[in-house]
Image (cartoon, rainbow, N blue to C red):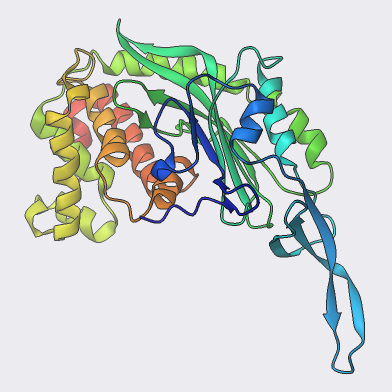
Length: 347
């Protein structure tokens, strides 16, 4: 599968690092200890500057005109062009400034643990994941760690996005926890004053603590709500339903008439719900929390994405397929916790 990790010809290394876990496609660097931000930026190959310069237009008569309205961005270290056309007000967020955001969240670097970071393409897109000091606990032994994820682009293609993410330790399910109207996601445009606003972003990200507590309460409640295997199967059908046509068939109890692709997806998620080791815990076996975890776990551990980049986008990025399905599963579980079997009355 394609990895699209940046390869730095000067250093001979791919721009990616991870702590303890195997590096992306066995490329990049795996380290045993959590690095400081200064170490992490070097391990990930993100220790480069980005600058912008006006585009130059060559006219038919050979005359060159320096543009006032169109700029390109480039890496200073190797002169690679990252973005061919950005506006005059486009402001670059340097990689080191992205790391400083994480350190500021907890008032310094002592409480933040850098898990992964890297660059894609020519270095035009970067991402960083850092672990926060505390946890989400469901029951006695089911623990989810709390992460802050950030991605940014240097080519003008996307805004700066930072989000709170819980990761379930047992099966490494990753889900962006923007489960309540994306309130715990912060996005910035690359325009003037972006640095000033970005420096204050950690104040907004304090929302993560509020939502993680709320999420902990919700998951603990769901872990006490019983659900039958048949209900889990129906909930998965509704959560993974791709559109109105399939939904109409589900309403008519005509699941067998839906597409083979859809049925394979549903059965894959249902098998995960029934057979996965992580689904045999007291908090997940036969519970509503287990049903929700089956959807997130399926996309993280079973679904066959075409590439790791597509998996990354689907699970982590706002609007990704796994994100949308996770949101639907969350909404269905919330409704089931309130009304039980009545949520399956689709008429």
